[in-house]
Image (cartoon, rainbow, N blue to C red):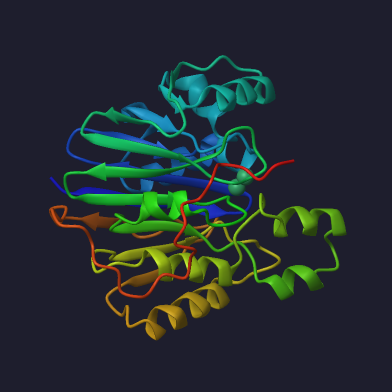
Length: 289
Ligand SMILES: [Zn+2]
Ligand SMILES: [Zn+2]
């Protein structure tokens, strides 16, 4: 059977996606309300009761807020690292049935192999994922202040990539409602990716095997789906990557389900553009304080 990915919602106030393979049904983050997650799963004929696990990137509320509602009714295992578990339990005042992973390690959930890697973001131990299925690979790369060499390398094998395009830098700088300190946090190396920074990442990881690029975690006030789409599409066209379908996501609506049906390539994917990044390996997970 093919693998199916459905973005149930994504934006700076809520993120949740659903992945289903022949053997495994997973949520990727649970940052919509429990009720919304249940309703949106129902639109594709699924429910939290049939989940095999929920994998969590980090403890910010836009990634975990639905856990309380879901776990009140269903005992689903939560896959996260130890610091994230402790932060969630403290914030939500719940005890999690956890399968702890070490950041940087890999583990299997049924027929899905999950590779984890550290990303630079202002959370306790934030991670990105590469989910490897028999039908192809899905990269999840949101909530990072800058693209590290490590993160880029880890998602290079993706056939589908969920990539943060959080803000337009000028819209963020001009926003009258955000205090300067918050703007600084978003723009920092442990904040969020701008459209332009995401375009650099997309260019860097874009291979002949990449098929679908979801633009995720958009700020409601400091970005628009059209602007993010234009910036990324123009870059893809510039490097000749017209085989990649670019789609903006929204917090308010579910995306059409994407079906991965290709067998994963046995040969390394060929890059379509020269590297934008330093050829030297990234030295470590975090900048010094
Ligand atoms: Zn975050
Ligand atoms: Zn977030």
